[in-house]
Amino acid sequence: MIVIVITGLPGSGKTIASDVARELGLPVVIMGDIIREEAMRSGIPSSMASVTLRLRGGTRYIAHKTLEKAPRSLSIVVIDGARSIREIETIEETLSTKVILIYVVAPWRLRFERLLKRGRPDDPRTIEDFLMRDLRELKYGLGDLIARADYILVNDSSVEEFKEKTRRILTSIMQVSR
Image 1 (cartoon, helix red, strand yellow):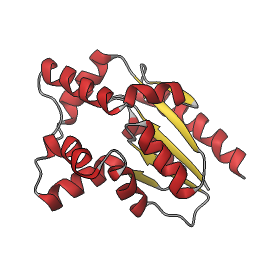
Image 2: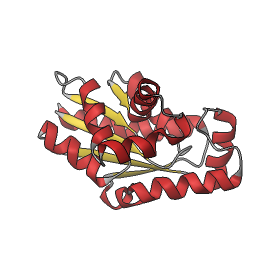
Image 3: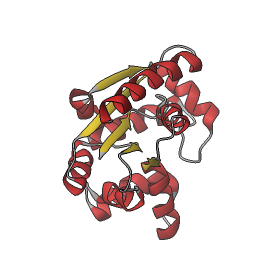
């Protein structure tokens, strides 16, 4: 089994990359969806869900919850949204496989504009909130993942260009897995 993990700071383009994976027929499990589900189930406000769940359950909790939803009978699965080396290690240890890590980057101003337009309940509404969220994400260990990345995918152009870059990377990974 090959596990492709897509990661990056909020607004970098992980969702678009995951959509391309789905278009290619790959199953995608989104860690953010798991966090939101767990928050609703536990009555935790969505803005505090990620922090609270990691404090309550430990640094590997969300990865374990995500793996409960990941199909294991397929040769490739995509997980969107890992935040730390611990989460990558959990996936590798639990599934006895090596993770292929794709780190998506985009300029901060572009990410901020995207988050303002996206409008999820936990998205920042001010530049201060945006910067605080980035700091929180980096404290989880997200910045460390760039050093571990197999691919760094730059999202600073049109959506179509970014989709094409993503498609090329995912297609090459799929070809190797055959």
